[in-house]
Image (cartoon, rainbow, N blue to C red; front, top):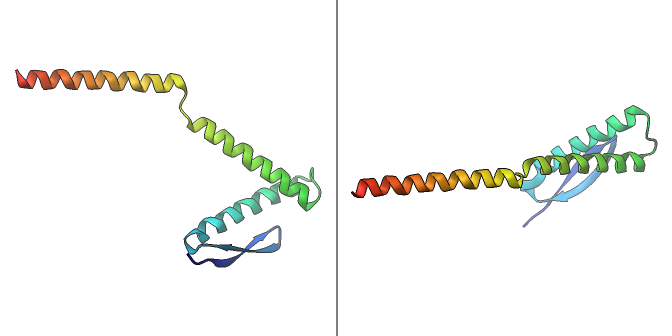
Length: 102
């Protein structure tokens, strides 16, 4: 598998990153997303220094990702409800098949 080098600009600094051709668009989008997050943190004026801004951006992005993951995972109660409905549908289908056979 070949890799290409792309240039990603974050807070006016360019970084050269190697990645497979099929991942270039996603990596560019990730770089733009990170740049926006870091610019927002820098603009707030509460965090000074590139390293601290990068760490705060990483923490914020990690938190957002974990929240999205947590919200996307069905709860046990939801899973049980879906299973009960599925069982009822299956039972109804079995009854319909038995009626068709009779």
